[in-house]
Image (tube, rainbow, N blue to C red; front, side, top):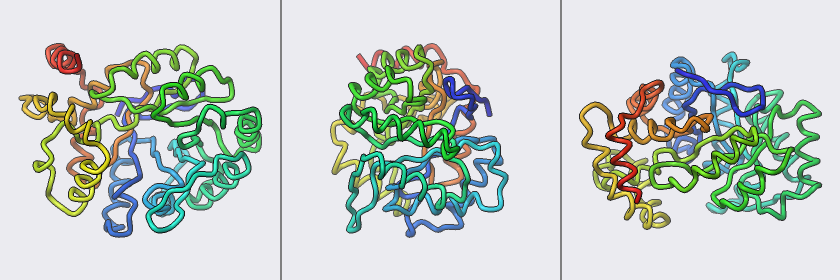
Length: 303
């Protein structure tokens, strides 16, 4: 597994990170399987694990903590998010006040069984919420040794562009994949400012595959229902990339990840997996370049 620097944080991360969220963190997903995926990822060289306080109805962080229990986490970069929380009944609530973010970080440490968070990210803040009080609170978390680096994730390009200009922000996480080539300018801007850049949703949530081709188990039905309910535009655009799943030497997932990793300004691509075979398939792409003809086909489909 190859590694890359996480901007100027002093941290180094595996270029492929494991996302601990969604179905992976739900009680309906067998805990032994979920923990086994984390253990296998570690054994295969993954050092970056990304989760959030509100993920999987608040169950993802404690589950990741149980997965790490008894493991040497000194070489791992464990990232989580604050500012949102599970409010019951399937609802996600926000509290982006500095006091709530600090309290969330302290709960995350307990949930994860850690003394220090490698990375704490604000979960979808607005520009207005990135005020002096918030930045001071984030800096204080670092001063107190509760977080080594701080940052944010957002699907709003304006928020990312604003964050790039803030000295207190170390890392940004953006939705970057074959369906989001427009993020490349933001990524270059962030890297030029010394920020670490994490690529979220590098597999475009599987929207490049036919929906029915994904259905093998309950998790697939859950993801498919979410796609139909919330991501119909992405499903439609994903049809242009069906060719990725007919390549002779790479799977579609591998090609999608290779596309993201071909960008030298990306520190790591973070994906989720609920099957060991998918985890192994994706990790095999580390160090494998994307063929020029495939890259050209992707660019043509994006135009």
